[in-house]
Image (tube, rainbow, N blue to C red; front, side, top):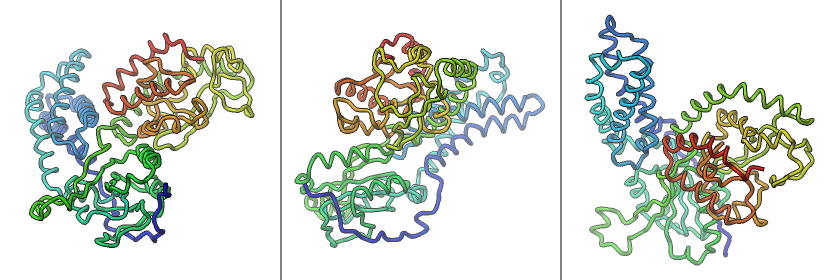
Length: 477
C-alpha cells in the first residue's frame, strides 16, 4: 500500500484562550457531589454543637462523601456521555449511606443513627445531588468551557466534512482540533477548515503523548478500502493504547435532502471506543490504589523485611531486581521484585521454566507464593501500576517467535490501563510462561473483559480471590 502520509505543513498556532487551563467537567461534577453530601450534615452539626460531636461527624461524613464520589465514578457518573448521571450519584449516596450506617452501628457509634439530621440527610441529599447536576449540565456551552483545555485529532482520506465542527458539538467533543492526518497525501482545499496538518502517523502518536487528547475521529471514505487493511489495523491498535475516545464520522451530504441537512447536519459520528472502557486516567481507581496500596504496604512491612533478609542470605547480589516492563500507553517503567535468581547482569532475557537452574532455593519459595511481587506495592504508590489490572510484560517477551503486540492485534488495548499486581487472568490461573499464541489469547480475553467491565467491586473481588489463587497455583516457576 501507499505509505500513510500527508504533505509536511507548519503547525498553525492556536488561540491562547483555547489552551487555557480549565477544570475538566468531571472534576466539577465530583466537587459538586462532595459539597452536596457534606452540606446538610455539617450544617446540622454546626447548629447543634451542644448535643453533637462535631469531630466524629466530620470524619464520618467526609468518608461518606469520598466513597459516594468513588462509587459514582466507578459506575460512570462522571462520564461525558452518561445520560442519567444524577440518578447514579443519588443511588451511590444511598447505597454508601446504608453501608456506613451499618458499619457505624457495628463499631459502637449509634449516635450517628439517632441524630436528628440523619433522616433529613437521606431524604434531601439525593434531591440536592439531582438538582446540582441539572444546573451544571443544563447548558452545552458549559461543556465547551470545560473542554477548552482538551483537544481532538482527525484522521481522514483527503478532506473533512464541511459540518464536522457541528457534529463534534452535538457529541460534546472538543472543537479544538490539534491536527488532521490526510491519509491520501493530497488534501482537498475545498471547505478547508484551516486545522493543523500532520505529516505522518508518528506525528499523530506524538501528539497523543504530548497533548490532552480526549477524542480521535476517523472520517469514513470509500478510498480507505484500497489502503492496506493491515496498516489501518496497526494504526487503530496504536490508538487503542491511549485513553482517547475513538469515533467514526460519516458524511451523508450526498444522500440527504437540503431540508434535513440544514436541520440536523450531514455529518454523523458513531462511537467505536468510548467511556465503556476503563482507562489509566480514572480518578476512582487511583484513589483506590493509594488507599489500599498504602495500607497493604504498611501491613506487609515486617514480611518485606523478613523476605529481604532471606534474599540477602540466599546468594550474592542485590535484594531487589529491577526490570523494564511495558506500562500504560506503551510507556516503559522499572518494575520492582525481590531477586529470585542468581545474580548475572550479563545474562540474556528468558522466561523462567519448570526446574529452571537460575532460580535460588529461597527464590523457589518466593515465586511459589508470589512473595517476590510484594515490592510492586511501591510501583503502585508511584503510579506506575495499579493493584488490579493486566500483568505487565517485558518488551523482549515473545510467543512463537513473535512479540505479544505482533502476535495479537488487539494486545495493545491492554495498555489503556495501568498494569496490575494481580488481575482477572491471574485468578483464573492464566499466568506464567506463554508457550503458544492460544495461551496468550486466553489471557488477553480475560484482560479485555476486565477493561470492559471494570468497577471498584470487581477490583475488590479480584483482590479477595488472589490469595486462594496464589496458594492453589501450579504454574509458578
